[in-house]
Image 1 (cartoon, rainbow, N blue to C red):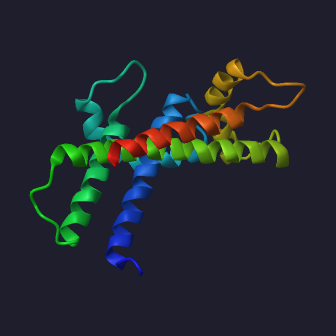
Image 2 (cartoon, one colour):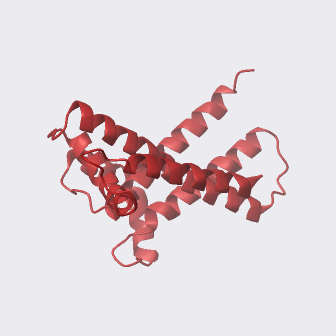
Amino acid sequence: MGQDPITLIIKTLGELYIFILLMRFLLQMARADYYNPISQSIVRLTQPVLLPFQKILPKAGRLDLSPIFVALVVKLGIFAVLIMLAGGNIQIDVLKLLIYAVVGILDSILNIYFWAVIGSVIISWVAPGSHHPAPILIGQITEPLFKLAQKVIPPIGGLDLSPILIFLVIQIIQSQLARLVI
């Protein structure tokens, strides 16, 4: 059966904004080029919402945690609105909802990395050394993962098997996260 259009719109818009918030956090974590046009767009889309939280929330070293916090709040808001639209009980277990939200955010981060690694591999085959802003950003996000994986599996005669290790680790973590919410 089809999904209610209102539910679909709320989930889609909410998850899209969560994606943008998480991208801002991951770009910051990877120390990606701030002056990349895509980075600038992400900052412009998130700054009005993040500004009040940046003043309140402490930084973890060089990392601004406000995008993660706001993504968590948006995820909780999506859950709350969907439960109300479904006519659910108002007496919701807040701790369980918070666990679902945290697991959802972690799963979203892992999905971003998964697709970024796939994108990076395809770009390395099709357009290595591209000067377009998107491949540059994807490379900057995935570079720390590749370096870490290459410490475990170094390139063998020009063949880099680190993406396979990254995919395996992502799948293992996602399967363990799924067990938390069952």
